[in-house]
Length: 256
Ligand code: 13P
Image (cartoon, rainbow, N blue to C red; front, side, top):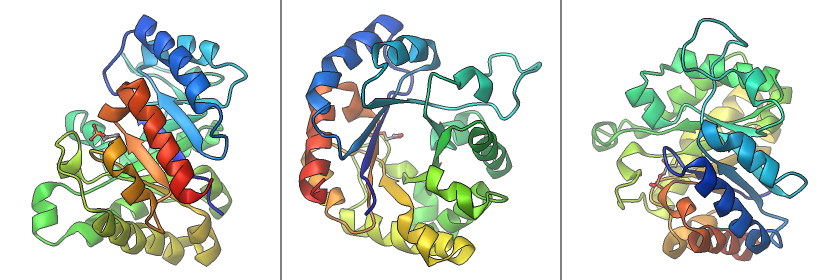
């Protein structure tokens, strides 16, 4: 049985003070839903404050990115070592980093491996853009991102990886992929690819999230799909009541 996982990707939102206040408000409301894994991914600057506020709780912390080297002349970058003790998860390969920071599949793969080597759990984000979607290239493109992102990752590390399917055209646009569509792509392009790489058992245990305009109003629909194990959420994760509603929906629908 795959434990559902809801991760809030706050992107470039909330100051340190706002972040700490937010998690203090959120924590008592989501704590009862212990069978759904809940993760907040604040901006780097708020990680230490949030980690401190959540110490000993079951609300987990993720970083939004990392560098693959432990240290060195990489102005502005944050290494996996620096995240030690602050984050359990780290988002890798988000489409905004691929697009605005020009992160290639090779860079994403280095980051996945660096995260694992330092005991961090990557949330590997993949997804096609609108042109690829309209050209019918979704399955082959997403599958190639999965293969590239996981290159050289041994089977025994796969239990520490979550994959997030986020169609770029659905991010922050209010134009979400239908639950059926999302499930089909997740099944064919992600779970089947992982099965081809690692075998049926690893593929069946892999947790895969959907992301892109997930809201309290559509969460139950996504969660009722057999291959969708949670959500990577932007906008709705910035509002305490929405975050709680997402977790409640996952718990209700997945029977967790
Ligand atoms: P929205 O939920 O705001 O569409 O963002 C999705 C996302 O990019 C999460 O990583």
